[in-house]
Length: 111
Length: 115
Image 1 (cartoon, chains in turn brown, cyan):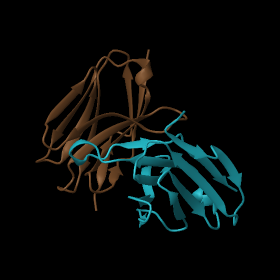
Image 2 (cartoon, one colour):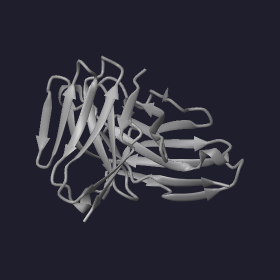
Image 3 (tube, rainbow over the protein chains, first blue to last red):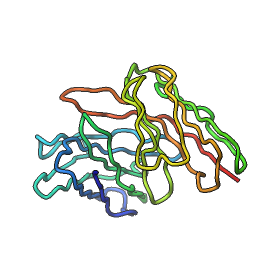
């Protein structure tokens, strides 16, 4: 089955800095790579996703890149703000299977 | 109203008790999932159902069972709770979107403590 590794497990940045979270996956059949943000006391919420036919996708301050050859994908957050502080999860899967999640990254943005 | 609801939100129980966690959704999705979240271990899949007559084991199904009562309802049971089942439990739903993607929508979670 699919195996997703996520790094780092914790990340501390100053407000305004950029943050990068990296994930690798093992199953070459995976073609859908979402990122979820979980705020304290809430369920995970999708913030951005990318499909295997695209190398990069941006949405305002967040972007995701995908390297299918190397089987890795990354989340980039620019101009971080305190409200970006949360746990972020990457996942891999396809429309015809379940998603496998990484172990999560706790991002702390200090004012 | 929330699209995915879970009851109860918090539960404290004792070892050996039977517990049921319930999930309801108004999104009209066919697919429903139960996950367990433990610190440092991320989200692990317990059971999933792709339609009312379909039930599948996930990565960590031992000690759990599920029931899909209707398209909108999916319950998770712990037949005889044990302390290492203390965790945060999430229900999620998904429908096939564009090009077969599988965006999942999560409920608010149930915090279960087994003493």
